[in-house]
Length: 139
Image 1 (cartoon, rainbow, N blue to C red):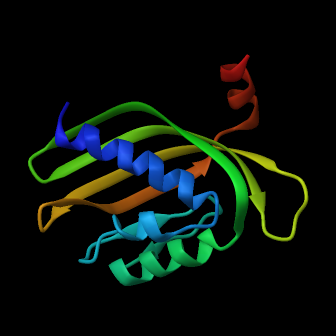
Image 2: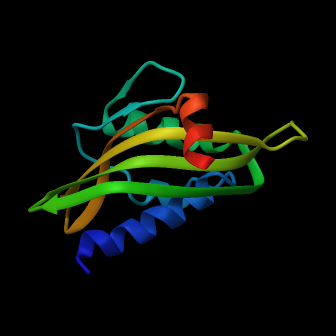
């Protein structure tokens, strides 16, 4: 198992914490040096390491305890100081102030680089998986 494969297990744990309103584990793996970018599921873009980290921390606050998520990694690779994974994120989450859990299915691409010997998230692109495609895959 490569060090990036081992890191992806930590990434999975950070995703689980995030959908339960805890940004701390993700914050530990977010880039502290530029460039860094985030293309959120609702559109738009965020740029700059500190801005991206602030958005992640803020957005985690929208989630309440009781969420579940899985990362379906379609492919990943690491070469030198750069790595990526791409695939799907499936989640059932509870939003603060709402009683009902909702399902989320996202298409994900994440890029990482080594900073001081550790893998750091430098780009995340997340957008909704078309409903009919998500249902087709589940069925």
